[in-house]
Image (cartoon, rainbow, N blue to C red; front, side, top):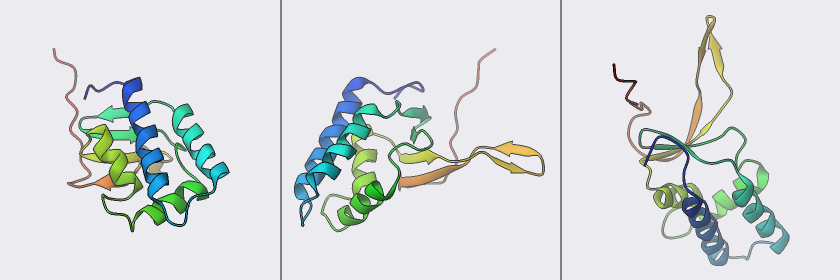
Length: 129
């Protein structure tokens, strides 16, 4: 993937992954809750790419509704919610931006790894010149 934004096709794919997962959940997910989650997928900011890591913006797909679905999906074959999203995007890791840390007056990025494997290090080529 490019280091820019993901395409609309990928967004629609995430929506389809969520629809499929909702259909698999037992007991079924409340229709209103399912509609809310699908709406959030459609309205979320584009996924950012850092090397082979797909990065959700801070606050994207968060809250108790997402936690509930993620926990319910862990028991399903084919991986949980975040693993399915990672696979759909074709990323090595799926992460979400967190608050910027300030340690000893040095600002540092902070992410929550949602799915994937490997070290947390991401190497992004710098400008040539």
